[in-house]
Image (tube, rainbow, N blue to C red):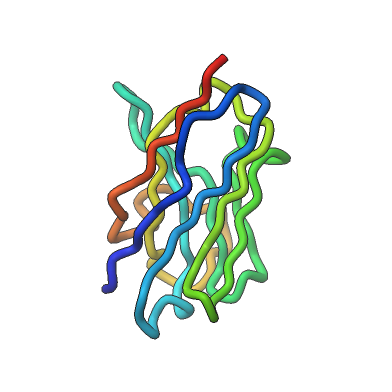
Length: 126
């Protein structure tokens, strides 16, 4: 599986926005769901959001609903995570990964994904 590469992280004030990107090369990108997770220091990795292979279904953790939006463009082999109304508790390293299937009939969690990227740091100052 081709590695996914995250970008777009940075330092932002509380209430601000960031847009993360998850990019890959290869023809298989559009065949799988893609998901985002995050991990803060001293905490377990947690699921954030995911999108089905063709973008017709999206999934969100309760703590980001209404603030984060996931989207994808298979022609560009890219998935984006638009993060608005950021809070200090959103500070973490954010990772993207391939799903194990094209779509899910439930809200997936971290074990439903594989081949996590190297991550991008998001720091929200209060």
